Image (cartoon, rainbow over all chains, first blue to last red; front, top):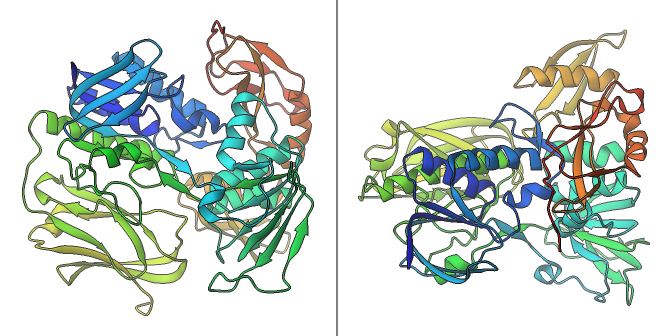
Length: 419
Length: 125
């Protein structure tokens, strides 16, 4: 059986950044397994710009951003295999995959980085009533058809969900000549970035229906219409608030789910909220030597942050390979009141440099609140925030010195009455 | 003096900007931005709003049939559909290098349409 020091599952933004970082730390035996016919992952279909402002201080399109990393990878001569579908990952780090050149292969790795990204929630996941005609797509599938394969999926479009991909597709379909009749969002606030609300909807006078959902899809063979209605704060449909639109296409932008089928097979414990692996400060899962980063760990808003996380996981994996990762006491990071989740989920201070970054999302929208960070029940930091929204991932830098002596928990909570 | 509030669209951070305008409708100050681009954006947005445009054109002999393209700089918001029209029946052949100029001075806007990725020539069966 072939062996590698590091095998990276997925050649998208997280996988590329992690492999490059591990190489820069001196690891030379690296293999990336990518199931698509080229590297770059989802970036290749994200032709809009705005990527790379943090990473390269430039605004790039998705494919341009991917190209920078692919070039770096190729310059370093890091090995990768395309069209390679991983069929099994075992907790002893034996990986099985198939591709048209090698056929069926088994390889063993000292360390594995999970970088499989995420997939879109589908219609079945939220059980929309109505027929099952053609013309219902996840926004990302429509995006791939339009931007890579060159097919328009419809002419009159309604979008369910205000996720960023849906908003970006609203603009894209409009520019290509389709009529987008509206976006319905079941929550009372948008789930997309404010800039996308502005430049993708407002710019083209596309209406947003907050606290609305689809109650009926019409059409036997092809979608012919959609009915939406307002919901109350318990998400129950309010009678007599229905609105009807004649459309031939419905795009769903109703959330992303980390793609963890392989993680399950390797007995990796997933978090109920993020639906990605539970990781420590080194992005290591409960299985020693298996790390996770990017959207397979938790869904990000910005690719720049995915790359940054990939880099950290790559550095940590190389430490593991070199036997430099320290065992020891960990404390838990607890999502207090108003916080949806925190990554990493646990921390061993021994492996923390001068600072550690916590990433988290709030569970609802807030205005003028204070974030209170406590260590074993004692307040160590308070940060005022003018606004917080679930659609925007928050980051918090904490000094190692502030964490020393933490015995059981570090918690973050939103406090509304301190201002 | 009037105040206009807006979300900055320059980058995904989306700062909440506040612009103060005097009685002649000139921008006096911009606050809430976390970088210099926010200031420029707010002033432009209130006088001559511009946008970057990204789309795709047909490509032959590459891994996919579409080549992503982008404007070399931002263009007036009202010209987006004119530029889309100019891209309509365009076709190029692989190989194309990232940043290759596809249309020079599109619609006389002083802005080029450039490739936004490299696409090598491939032999498709």
